[in-house]
Image (cartoon, rainbow, N blue to C red; front, side, top):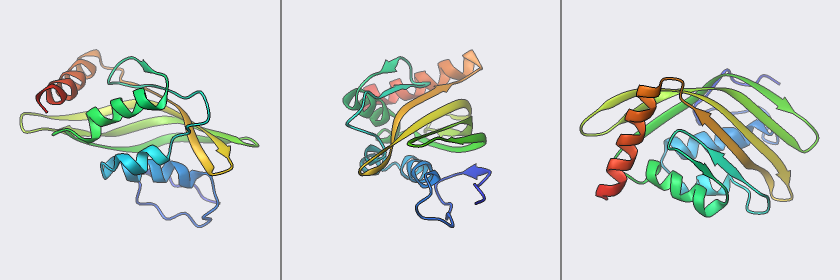
Length: 157
């Protein structure tokens, strides 16, 4: 099976049972700002964690949901697509490591985003669920501007 070179959330995978569909569903939800569908992408039965550019390590669904809320429910429009990635599949775990590119747009600014990203999924009875995400921005100035935009807008809401 051919895995897409870029994942935006709009891909149609030839095998509906392929694990990569869980990743596609996440980016579809994220880019559509659909927090409920994004929530379905995460496990509630496992010790989950997220460490991403909004700062800190979030260790449980409530903390992760709060982080996504700052990104998905505020004025800022964040769009990312996953590219330059490798897909690794084991019996009941897969992970992808690669890069996100995209943008954050507010009334006051527009920033291009470049994030190194790893996502880990585990197979549960209800399907593939995300158990870990790590994202890093290499450029400290871009990281600071991104955080300021997200947190400024979150405080104003």
